[in-house]
Amino acid sequence: MILAVGGNAALIVVLWARHGQFPHLTDPAAVLIAVGQLTALLGTYSALVQVVLMSRSPWLDGLFGIDRIAGWHRWLGFATVDLIVAHVVFTTAGYALADGRSLTAQTWTFLTTYPYMLMAYVGAALFILIAVLSVRAARRRLSHESWHFVHLLVYLAIVLSFAHQLSAGTDFVHDPVALAYWVSLYAVAAILLIAFRVVAPAMMDRRHQLRVQSVVEEAQDVISIYIHGRDLGELPVRAGQFFKFRFLTRGLWWQVHPFSLSAAPNGEYLRITVKEVGDFTRSLHRLSPGTRVVLNGPYGIFTAVRRRRPRSLLIAGGIGVTPLRALIEEMPQRKNSITLLYRARSWDEVVFKTELDQLVAARGGVVHYVVGRRGREVSSHPLAPRFLLAAAPDLRDRDVFICGPREMVEAVMSSLRALRVPAGQVHVERFAFLS
Image 1 (cartoon, one colour):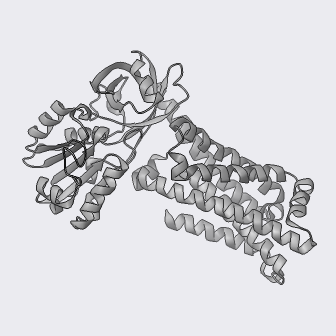
Image 2 (cartoon, rainbow, N blue to C red; image 1 turned 120 degrees about the vertical axis):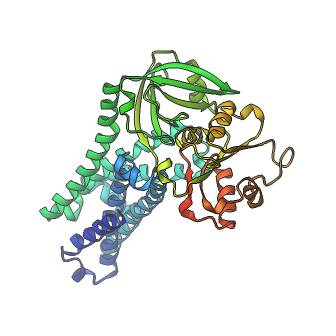
Image 3 (cartoon, rainbow, N blue to C red; image 1 turned 135 degrees about the vertical axis):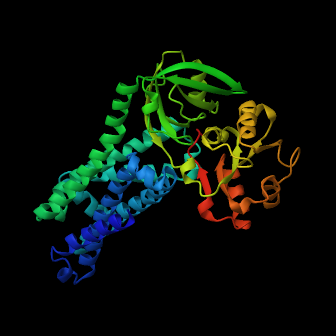
């Protein structure tokens, strides 16, 4: 994957160079313009790679995992904006220097002389807006719905940029080979996007006819939603994975949210368990039996397939226990094969206690509940290395599956590094529940 992305980036530079650019780099203005061209090409390519990464391709997800893909997507997003801003700055400065104009005058000349230039500036502005709202401090202030809408603007930005590239880009205007290459890049990204974000969910909906069967209260502000449908045994899903859910009812049909399965697939029903953390999750309490459900997925590699050791330590935080509960159900019944460490701030927040006790006991394991406010009822560092070793003295010989809030995950990862647990035995799910 990395070789393919890097190889195409190198090919883009070669296509640019074959237009005879280097002999003309004889003055500062020409150098600035050349840098502006290269940053435009690489910035556009970076945006297309982002689209491919987030097309929800099951092949990419199975190969790398949604967590790693999302991390690449985030950093590529900032790189895209940096390159596009650099393109605007270097190109404007280069032409302004060559023509003896100010930057403002040159910008006005671009807008009034070149076709689709206004669209290009709007596209660049949209990229910058998305980057600003992607900064973690700003992201926390946005609802999931607002965040989803903002990200949809990236497709508009790419379309606007494509029109500019088609009319003014040197790779398009004078080189049919480069034209065919770039059109193929856009076509591949568009096909993957349509195939896995539109066609795949529609086909799954038609085949399985999913409906809400019941809504059951599990704990304080926590519900489970049971979903029935046709031929559920044919869904290619494993315990620990998640779907993107769309509930086709008034006020919810336009929203898509990720939830892990809280029970192992059984061919009879799918179950998700949701904690109330906002308007959307609160509205799920009012779902009526018979409500249609559209799925996209499954996603994630947080499954028992990744186990390398016969024994496992599972560490859950709050509602993050949902995929772990499903994983336990799928794991073999072998003495002392499972230890579950469940962190919650109060007993009211503990979900599936009876189910967990029974499932773990059937596998000869043990559950450790770490319940209480940190620094009051429990230690200030309840997930410190010595506590993990107390729960599982043979920790280095176990696979470790972790799911919970970011702060908890970071604390556990720090402890595991201190204990020198091999990274290949540590499996983290960060997309298992709505946060």
